[in-house]
Each structure stands twice: as C-alpha cells, then as structure tokens.
Image 1 (cartoon, helix red, strand yellow):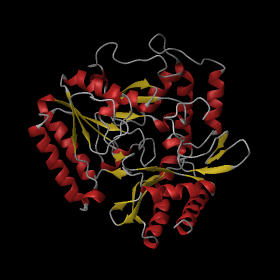
Image 2 (tube, helix red, strand yellow; image 1 turned 60 degrees about the horizontal axis):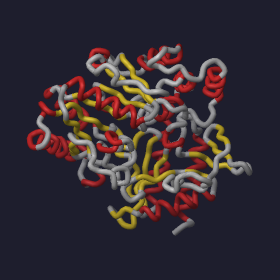
Image 3 (spheres, one colour; image 1 turned 135 degrees about the vertical axis):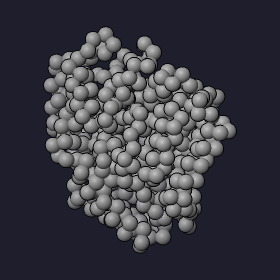
Image 4 (tube, one colour; image 1 turned 120 degrees about the vertical axis):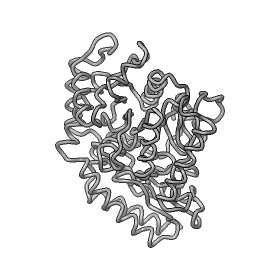
Length: 416
C-alpha cells in the first residue's frame, strides 16, 4: 500500500495497470473479467475507443476552464445533450465532481426553494460520505460512525424491503406508505418537510428495487403536500437497470434527478437536474466548485452518451439483464446457500445465507476470493457483506456473462 492511508482497504488484491472492455490487466499480464465496473462507473467498459479519443483530443485543447469564471463548449453541449434524456420539464443542470456533492446540491436547493428545514430519507439508502450526504445514509453504520452529531432535520422512513419483511410487494408497499404518513403526522410535518430523497433501486443495502406502487405513493404525497421528490440515480441510473433512469420503471417523475457514476465512463463528474423555475429558487453562489464540469470530464460524458445511443446499451442492459437473472436464478434452485436474486437490468444481487433469512457475509467473501483467483472480479454489499453484486459493463457480451456465471458456479461447488 506504500504511503496510502491504511483506511483505504481494497476488496481485492489486484493492482490494475490497464483495462480493455470488460477486462482488467495487471503488470504481469494476468487478467480479470471485471463485473464491478468500478461500482457502476465504467458503464461503457474500460477505455472505450470513442471515450478515449474524446478525452485525448480535449486534453490537448483545454483541460480546465473553471466554470464559475468562464463557460466552455463541452459543458454547454453536455447540458443540452443530457436534457434530451431527462424527464420532461427538468431543463436545468448543475454539475459537480462526485455523487456526494450532487446530493448536497440537491438537498440545499430543496431547502432554499421550499423554505422548509426537514428532509426524509429511506432506511437502507446510501447517498454519500460527506456530512450532509452521510446524514441521509442508513445502509450501514460505517459512513456515520464516530463523527456525529450528524446534520439536523433528517428523518428516516421505511423502505419496502420485501425480502426482509417477508411480504408481497403490495403489502410491503402499503405498510411503508402508512409508516411514512405516520412520520409526517408525528415527526416531520409536511409544512416543515422540504424533500423526500430515494434511490429507486437501493444500492449498498443490497440491490432492492422500490415497487412501482411505492414510488407512485411518494409522488402522490409530495404533490399533496408541496414536498419535492429527489431521485438519487447515482448507481441505478444511466441505463444500468434497462431504462435510462431507474425511476422510469414506475412511470413517475421526480422533481430532481441526481446522477454520477456512469455519466462519464470513469472521469469525475456528477449532475443535478431540475426545472429551471425550481433551480432559480436556489440562492446565488450556492452552486459551483473549483473542478465542477471539468472540460475533459464533459468531453468523456458527451462521448459516453454517443456510445450508449449508438450501441443501444440501454436496451442491451435490459436484454442481457434478463439473461443474467435467468442464469443466477438457476443457481438459486441448485444451491441452498443462495436465498434470492433481486435487482433490475445489469444491477443484480444474490443473497448468501447460512439458512433461509440468515445472512452469510463470510460465505460471500470466500466466493469472491475464489472468483478472483479464477479471473473474475465481483463485489459485496449488504449489512453483513452477504450480497454478491453483479454489475458488469453495459457493453458486456453474453459470452462474458456466461463465463462469469460459470466461474461463480464453480466457486460455489468447490468452496464449501
């Protein structure tokens, strides 16, 4: 680890020197099929030729044009190109570097626009590691532990985790909406509540999609009470779930969309989208940053959008996601230590257990170690690290999916 902080603990022993498509290589030429995509970042694969060419060309022309001092063409073009994919009416975009920054931009705007202090997040959500974003996070304690008190004015409502409740979707959704109503009656009255923020498909907690009825119920309550609905699409957006935005599965429209990860194929960039009228209600100077909307990152993001469109990667994520799910569900039927497959598109998780309902993080880690030895890179999530997540590039081929599942099945059968 040389002189790096000892708190930066890697989940694998790989020192990657280069990447190509779905593959990572070390200095000795060993290769790994990367089904982590840098936690969903390299959606177009490692070093997609179109993205590389765009970044190389931009580096030779202009690297940094500080965007509260001057504009630059890539930033302007990207805001226009993004608007083509945003929900109707969300016609203003603010750029930052990271997902956490974008979340903080969104909740600051919500408080400014409504004049209300409170925010409601959902149990199991992950929104970032900076103070305000961590205050909204409840996927695990590791991003909150030891540096409280957290930001005031944050309340948590239940998320419809059907697997944990043991109910069907509608029963779980109805219960969680009733609990939200109770929270609005007892803890955060609507007149004090600026926004609800939700991952339409939860990431770090274990790849739980919110039922459409639940998201529709949130939209109805926000409309009734004048509360803003913020969709955190940082991990699940940008084609990952087989729709451009994961909230599209529920046919609802948020008031703000937060995006990052797959936006620029690995270059640091994030964005918040809202209606111009809403965005204008923020206070002057409340948005900005030294490196936001970096010219090279914006060039990579423009090329990323071209690749997604030209290669039809959103539809491919839906198709290949169905195929991957079929293969993983076949494993559930054969192996008692897998309890469930869940997620959408190419954002799937499998629950490893000692017995039904008893999470087994040690088993998941053993499997990941065996897969790494065999040339496959995967990640874990969940409160006990028990969920093995499948997050391949959107460009991954069916043959690569087969290779990954075959490698994982071999690890299941040979690492009791």
